[in-house]
Length: 306
Image 1: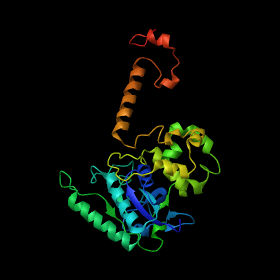
Image 2 (image 1 turned 30 degrees about the vertical axis):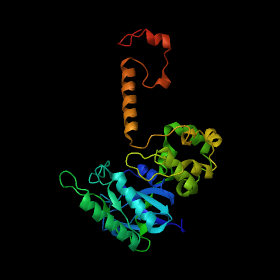
Image 3 (image 1 turned 45 degrees about the vertical axis):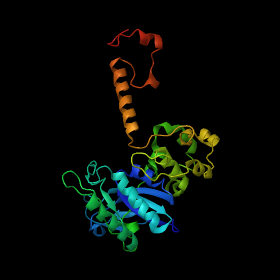
Image 4 (image 1 turned 60 degrees about the vertical axis):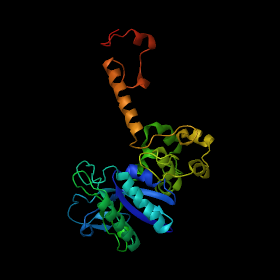
């Protein structure tokens, strides 16, 4: 990643944020991890052999905020696009921070400038948001600027999570278990470099999250503009996608709903009601595990008796 510039953001849930940053043009890799937004973080941490480690004392609230590291080309033009994306993800209430378990600042909002140019751009947009985005009770945007301008601050104040938690849509989606078995090789899922650094893994993860659609979703105004050609550049034609169990990715087959999209929420709610109704009828919660034939179901009464 030495030839690319990098930027660091805490934009809420890092799984959702990674997917959306990963679909922007001129972004080539993303990692998720934790950063500290406390001004005195340098007093507690140093760089170990491979990552930031606790030096003395105890972590305090705000030392482990979910964060995305973005590697990109395009200089300040791309960085300003990343800033825009950060605030788009916080709408419609950029002053509200969702609480995390144990550490209420786990999903805090922050920008970590690594250069004077990044600091200037971040300061300008935060000032603009403070002036224009005011809540019903006078609330202001919650994004904090944490200066990481010193040499090696980028390494000091970013602790990547393990491989299994990177690219969460690609690595952990239940319906991709068959795919994971086929890709669970030294070339793909078991390859740290592929998971952490490859543009292919980043883009596929974003597409599975619904963030790379050619259509806008929930205020996401800068999707990748050529999904089909991008997939083709990864040699992911329909035949290969089918062989890997990834037909979800083909623009002409199925468009996976975006993370947090209203349609997905409605679908989840409908599915939950169906499951509750099946339980009331004495049936297995999920249709896939239904051990009753159609005839027996027809003769069940409302109490589940034959």
